[in-house]
Length: 104
Image (cartoon, rainbow, N blue to C red; front, side, top):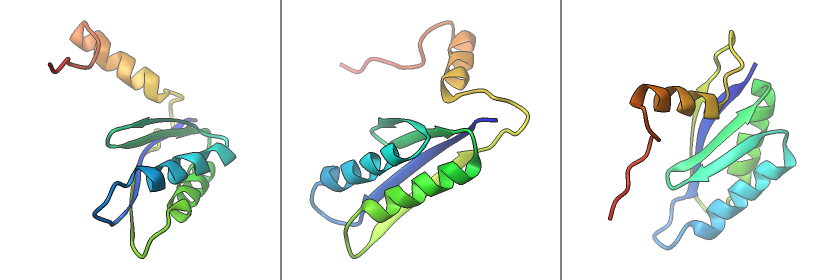
């Protein structure tokens, strides 16, 4: 089984959040998860939900601040081992091209 999630952790501040977000992402390295960060969050994959939840909790706790906002969206398809890449590949097959556009 593969559990895929979108995690977004950020302090509620006016200034740049990059340093604190980097702490959250770095915390994921302590867990048996694969991840990829994008501008809107970090996609995490784990074999078991417990590992994913533990990684998300560590990322949340790694961020300093009086207020931290965390959003976790989980896809736990229990009858399949499809990875996040497999899901993107399926969309790209339907599109007949890569699933991104170029803004200039």
